[in-house]
Amino acid sequence: MKLSTAIFTCAIIFTSFQAHSRDNKHYLPIQEALDSADFQSRLNPEISLYFGDQKHSTVIKSMGTFTSNKKTNAFGKDVTEACQWVLLSTVIALQERAIASGGNAVVGISSYYNKVKFSSSTQYECHKGFLMAGVALQGKVVKLAK
Image 1 (cartoon, rainbow, N blue to C red):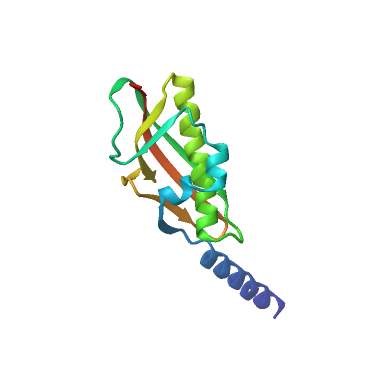
Image 2: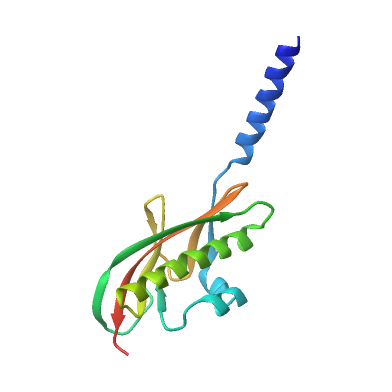
C-alpha cells in the first residue's frame, strides 16, 4: 500500500512540474524597454542599436553577424519584467561584441530564438516559462559613418 502511495505522489509531482515547465512566446515592445531606467543607465550610448529595418547612416565596415542568447530567472516575475531584464543582458552582450570588434553600431537586430528569425523594428521575441525567460538576438556589428 505504501509503495502505491509513493508512486502516486511521484506521478502527481512530476505532472505538476511538467505543467509549470511551459515556454510561452511573447512579442513585446522594444521602445518601452529602451526607455526604461535600467536600459538608460546600463546601455553604452557610444554603440548605436538598430532593430529590424530601422534606417541608419552608411556602413563603412562590417565586422560580421553575431548572436547573443541569454536566459534569466523568471520565477515570480511578470512577463514584462523578466523579458526586459533578459533583453537588457542580450543587448549589452551585442554592444560588448561591437566594442571588441571595433564597431560603433549593431544593425539589423532581430530575434533569433531557437535559430528562428523574427525581424521587427518595434517588437522583440521573448520566451518565458515558470522558472526561466530567454531572449536571443542576432545583429550585424558595423562601423557607421558619423
